[in-house]
Amino acid sequence: MGAIIDDEKQLVLRVASGDKEAFGQLYDLYAPRLFRFIRIKVKSQALAEDLSSELFLKIYEYLIDKENKVEESFQALLYRVARNLIADYYRKKSSQDIFIGDDFHIFLNEEPVKDEITSKEIADQIHKAITRIKEEYQDVLILYYIDELPVLEIAKILNKSAGAVRVLIHRGLISLKKHLTDEE
Image 1 (cartoon, rainbow, N blue to C red):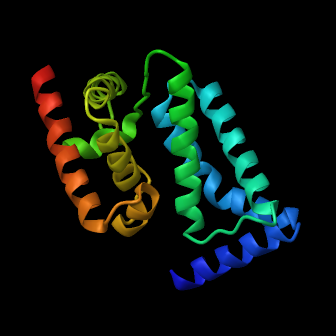
Image 2: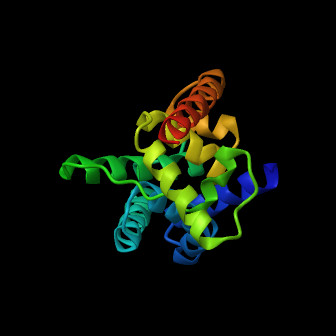
């Protein structure tokens, strides 16, 4: 893990000095995860692509600005900017729609369903349930279960202690399961 962080820091420093290839490497490393995070939070594939592009443009501009420094985890910075972009988008829109894919079977403590119709029904149930829980719970559950980030990294992203993040995960699961059982 330490080698990855050191490599990441070197890439960030190279981008700050104008190395576009280093930015491409950072993009390749983080784009799929951040796209998935954004895609789960917005309904449209095209919107998720637009927000992902905007995210990486903002990050690139941030890194090449000589006055800015990445004093935290680069990954935490990426997720924080992504969360802000999503919040800005929804602030401009009056309603919030969140798309949930089949990855959310983990909340049910079950194996993924092979039958497409049943899988779609489960995804729809989870979608309805997750839109009813607090956004803070949505974020920690996505970051922890879907993006598989460690609690300490989520704590950096959310500006919270690791203990507070663990509590949010626990409460988020309870809230999600409550909403899932209420729908049945």
